[in-house]
Amino acid sequence: MGRIVVGIDGSKSAEEALRFALEEARLRGATLRIVTVWSTPSAAYAGMAYVPTFDLHEVEEQAANARLEDARALLGDAPGVTIETVAVEGQPADALVAEAEGADLLVVGSRGHGGFTSLLLGSVSQQVAHHTKGPLAIVRAPEGKHGKS
Image (tube, rainbow, N blue to C red):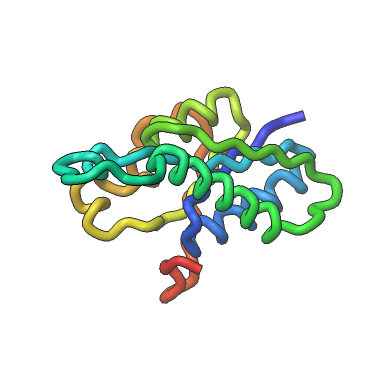
């Protein structure tokens, strides 16, 4: 049995990638592994004049787990496909490449929640394309559907 890994971030592009990955897993009789990556931005702690009353690390981890729950709900029952979910702390491209080691296919959306950050760092899909050793599918959302759902 093979393994299809899909990276999600809550964007429309990631939803399209998730749907594509489910179909690929179904066609190949493979396990679908849904991965979301989270981190606490170091800038969140820089220059703080007060100590927050909540743990930013915990908030980011909870948000990642909520994305996984949303993805699982979007897929519904998905008969015939074994689905695994994992939230990984780290940098998105690095974590996705590591999770896809030995997988039959890595699937990512063409655009996530980029904005200014993507101008500084480059897109995750582009970074993954340069660093993954296995097969990669970059799924594009229909025109005008790149925003968060």
